[in-house]
Length: 311
Ligand code: UDP
Image 1 (cartoon, helix red, strand yellow):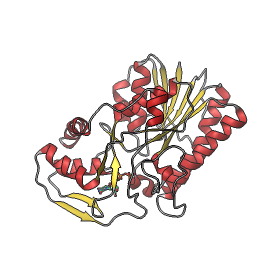
Image 2: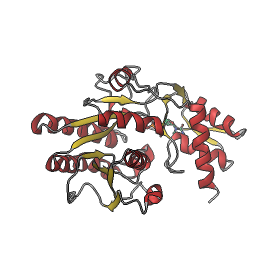
Image 3: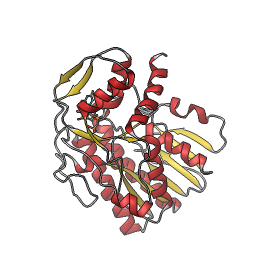
């Protein structure tokens, strides 16, 4: 099949391109390179099944020839990035989703939306199940991402209901692994670059807030299963192994054998206090669950970061 991946030069988008190609599909990757990088797809140069087009998907998307699948992964995704690009974040979640859906409709293609655990906001239900509507502040600084993704889900549902589009929604929980940017501001890249550069680790607040980190290969596998299934979602994909941010900072220190100090900084506005996916649906409907432990995933990610720091 022929797939179009928006955000194809990003962290998740590029891993998705790799998986689609490995499964024998051909891929057209679109990216405006605001937060993505051609470094992430450089290894695909010369692969005849892969094409990259530098394009901002908030503008009309024109692709010649047949398209069987459209996977909409374009968006800044770290709080740091979406605070720096608030309007772009809103536009790619709204206008970009509309354009990507329009392409899928035109080509009679299957559509998959990369949504997020941020639709649950600072959750009052824990762990988060797909039927929870969330607790989002629309006017806070994170609202640009959360509300764009919530709009994107609503738009995807409208195309499903009104145009009968074969569409799927995955809600992605915190994911980490190779190809994250050293300075994307998220917790794990921050801690890893800090430990490798012999700086103190910046834990926000008292570090008691929790997240549940999924290794990228597990996440991509869940998404691929959803794509190939007859399920439409929304469906949570993430690793339910919940940990406090202070604890994960200590794990990064231990993985490197470092005793760099931890520096406590102000907690960002509306930072969710807890986050953990309920993955019963994914287990049951997709026969999926994560396999890579945080211990192994941290080592593999650190190995990648080491190659980036030494450059
Ligand atoms: N965080 C931190 N230090 C950092 C970056 C993030 O303590 O240098 C915290 C952040 O406040 C949040 C958690 O780590 O509670 C996860 O943040 P991240 O930016 O990775 O993603 P989020 O889950 O908030 O979207």
